[in-house]
Amino acid sequence: MTALTPETVTARGILRHRFWGTYSAKIVLEFPDAASATDALRTLGRDPSWGTVKGEENANYLLWIGDSDALEALKVALADRITPEPCNAFGCRNARHDIDGLEHSVDFGAPFTLTVPIVPAEQLSLEE
Image (cartoon, rainbow, N blue to C red; front, side, top):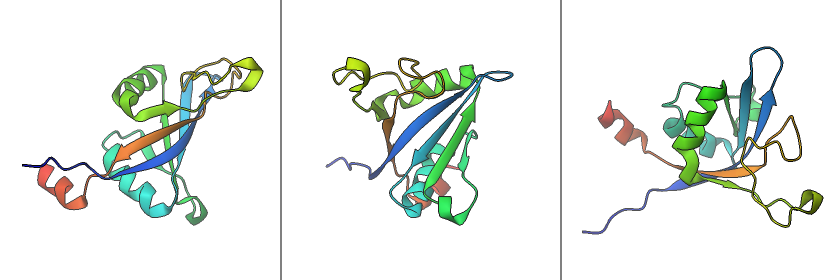
């Protein structure tokens, strides 16, 4: 029997630290198109911190907001699907920083890509 490889979509992402008041972080994912974002939300949306960005012009974006504990849990849950982009700033020579790293900015982490397996809607209804 041949194992099926799940279909995936890939997004570019960036994390923004929010240090004012109680710390939180915001992650924005940009997908190639709205359909890919919708498909990814079916998988990621099992975590209630994921949502869509308002406005039709933003249909290819997903948004996550959480506190430091939720961020650590998210990083663990997505560790095998996150790939930090190589950094050449300030002599880094293709270093790969953590998505919430403060190496070059106190506001933003390192840019990254996230590969999301697509769960068919039919399969989700069977799991409920």
